[in-house]
Length: 83
Image 1 (cartoon, rainbow, N blue to C red):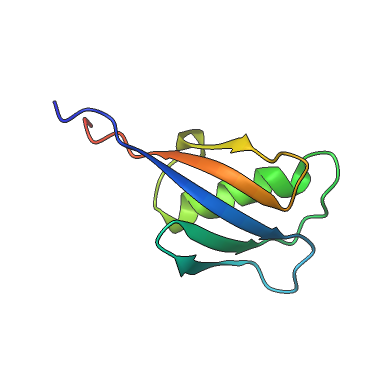
Image 2 (image 1 turned 180 degrees about the vertical axis):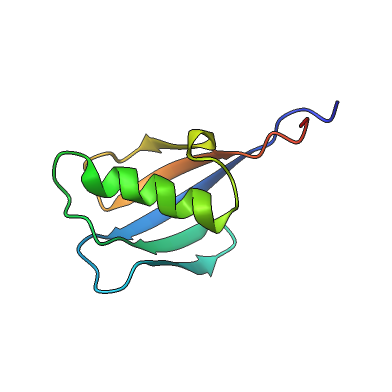
């Protein structure tokens, strides 16, 4: 059993983007463009789905730790190496 590895990333979110995607700005900072507006948590859900897809992980392993109402967020990714 290898255990769990948690990675923390700083994410800059661009809601209502024309084209969704993920751009790596540095080793721990990413820019995530989402189509959803920043209301009712829609953009946050899309950020989680987009990052999960980018890292080939299920959405359940990506969590917004801080910045739910901000464009700058701290995101935790649980890579769980034990599977």
